[in-house]
Image 1 (cartoon, helix red, strand yellow):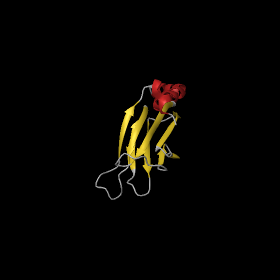
Image 2: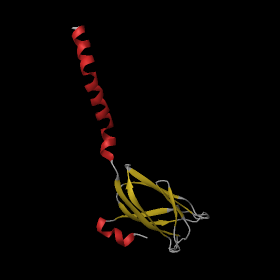
Image 3: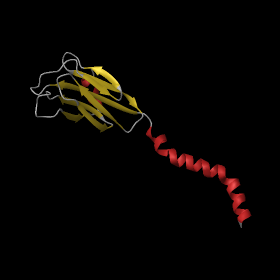
Length: 134
């Protein structure tokens, strides 16, 4: 019986190893690149645009324009992303989301404010993306 078991282990070890690798890596293989779009507006608590705010999306930093607008897009091989918005004199905003197409209004609270910075996220239909690109 032991000889038979050893023989089977030697003979089929390659197949068992392959199955373990394939099954263990299947979530990674299924992940692939996903399209993502995040555009938005950075504003203060009164609704005025905040120009030159630093918006970081998946490690890429952009500066919000004169109108407070920003946009990111492309394909990412991940399950989700995070966004961070900073501007001197204001409280930082951070949030993580799963993949979709978003437009967001980020309201940065003044450092002296009792409020926290916040984001109002809107999911976009793919057909709406052209309206939101910078």
